[in-house]
Amino acid sequence: MPLCCIVIADMNIYSEKFTLANKDVDLYRHLRTSRLFEMLQAVSVSHTELLGAGRKQTLDHGILWVVIQQSIQIKRMPAYEETITVETWPGRTMHVLFPRYYQVKDAHGSVLIQGSSLWTLIDQKTRKMVFADDYGIDIAGQDQPYQLPLPKALPQEETEHHVSFTVPYSYCDLNGHMNNARYFDLAEDNTPCAAAGACLQSIAVQYSQEIRYGSTIDLNWAEKGSVLFLSGDEKQNHFRMKLTYQEKI
Image (cartoon, rainbow, N blue to C red; front, side, top):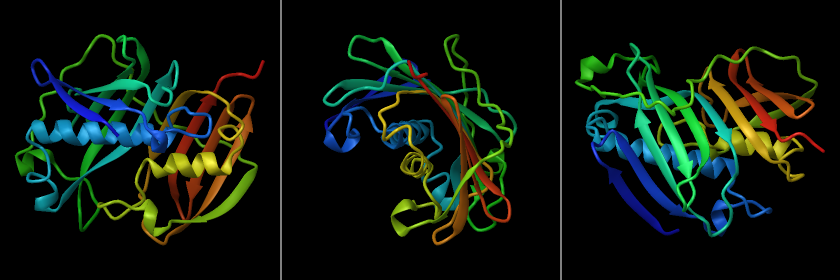
């Protein structure tokens, strides 16, 4: 997949260009939801490295960057062989939470997708949050007037469909748990809207507890009009997700 990195101006905003190949799109030739989130993750990691909070400051010291909430608004999903620009910038740090924002633009500079997320740092062994100051990490964020509001907590919803799911080896990343992008494959493989070609308009997800390799959870979901509510539960809630699709005409 052709890839070109561009760092904009004062280093506060970082961007990369992607040209969508066959592995990036679904059977309708639109960008896969999981690939979108892989791209957002990739630009986040690249920018964090440039800002001095990458592997040498985190992973090599036994701490991990993890995302705990994400929110996405979609005007249009990019299509096969389209070239897009994915931009990201950090917001102002909130105690142990690190806001990060995103925009996806087409070749003409029109905004196709906006996103926001909350990240934090955890100890690799204890899996508990740590203070960035203890590791000399300081990310000077800056708000932009056009950024999407930060994600909000998702309430529990009643569900009517249930399926058991065990995390396979291929779903896990170097943090030792199910990668955030795989949650969207899980959601779309077990609910009807994506396979029917419905167009996503918005996504909200919160990760309450990580899901480790080999763990088995109950995936619960309900469809209410054009909205899908999902949750993954074991002895406690692991994640909640809300997917809003374009209303059927």
